Image (cartoon, rainbow, N blue to C red):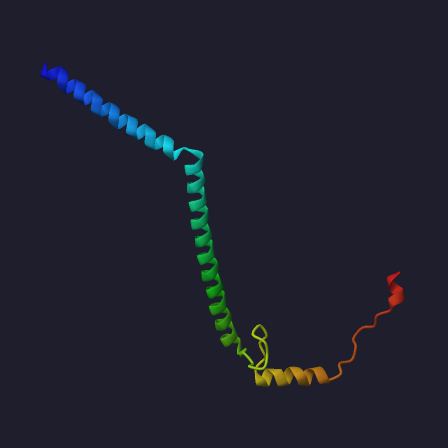
Length: 114
């Protein structure tokens, strides 16, 4: 008699356990639950992409500053943020070279194109 009561109780407990597991899985597979999971994953992915983009932008700015320092390009306060000026001596040499007249080494005749 005790055997039958034990196995009856064990079977009933196993049935309740299996039923709750199946019901949980069915609730997870409903369209609303799947849509909520997909939306949460999309939001999480968007946050990760935003963080990555901010990290890349910070790295680009840092590297640009390093290159500007290495090349001697400094920010001129009179210019907009995205325009850098040549340093003094190089800038003067560039202006002086523009003022000199270089003789043309070739001639171009528009009639030769036909």
